[in-house]
Length: 129
View 1 (tube, rainbow, N blue to C red):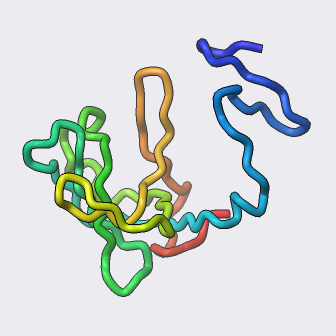
View 2: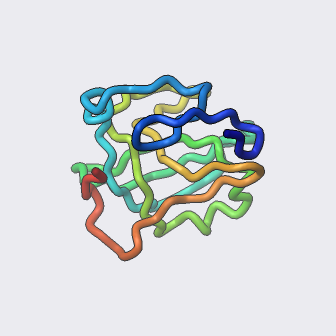
């Protein structure tokens, strides 16, 4: 089966792109995905692709997360207020001298990238299962 140039193989319950490695359910359960509300968004100076997001994920203080989405969001103000899924239990990473404390998850396709948002406003920190 082929879709948009991807070679897919059928698995009992779902289709997995052939280039991806399957993980077990127990491995998937290790991912802590929470809804966060974007409080601010600004381009990182001297970095064409990076946007620095401050996100309320229900923790004591907002998380700073760098995201390589600037080409899809030239006006960063449209991100403020959006609720997005955040992979919260990644180790902190330093990118271009700036700490990033997690990863925002997006829908990505052929020529597009867009936020994934809940159908209604929910409390920051709500778990995604």
